[in-house]
Length: 343
Image 1: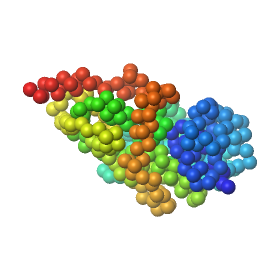
Image 2: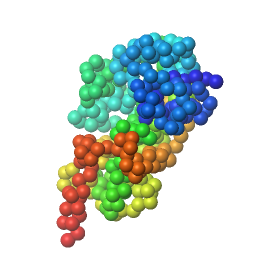
Image 3: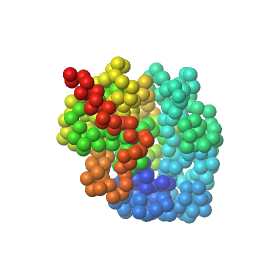
Image 4: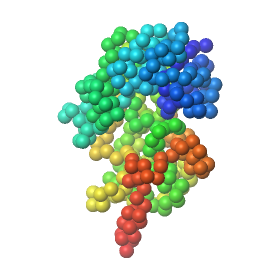
């Protein structure tokens, strides 16, 4: 039986990878700080209490080696150097990075004040931000630290695959963006307003599709970079329809243009330009997605509904005063706009 060790195995990506590998007959160990965070669907995985920054604890978790090592918590060059001490004893290693590393011709990236513009799907050869070591939790520091970590991993000569996903969604998300439409449906809103006519392309990545790529890489060790995104790139309008269908809810669609008041009809997926990842490198390696956006987001929608209807005992839903989500639920402004235009 092949063995996998997943660092950060109780989070969104880690649990999806564990679920996929367990179903394929793997022995799976997951690290984390709290065994209570092990979700029921991966209960057969072995939980190992370990701090990602503690080399001794991680070494004990790895033991005599593994066939696959998945690092969901590598954010800095220091993290990557610690990863190398483990990867030397592993057949294939996957390090999770992000689309946030890519820059356009003007040096703009997703965390810039000016959003990037790419002329077409972004390949792994697209330029990235310069590596850096400022606070990785800052807007400018996140991508720079990811690039620094990538360099450490790839320069090692070890069979480490860097995976760059885009807008990850799935059960266990700490910031489940689909809640913006799920809550509206649960609140029985009769109308949905969408800025920019809800037409922007959004390239999402299901955690289940990352798990499918991880399984592919497990059987094909190598030093490489691979994009990972869903086979389709839905618009906010299409996402709203997918959520509404799943919840058997109907609403009137009001597609706003540039004449609408600022702040009205916003969604988490709004962007001035498409940012689509090219998936040809992963496909050539043998990767096959678990499903498109509609198929893979269904479980997350059900998870959010269950949390809302059961009193959110696990605290998975955003708080009503969450500064990230609150602008998307200004029902009073919406109702005022609708009343004015109904006359």
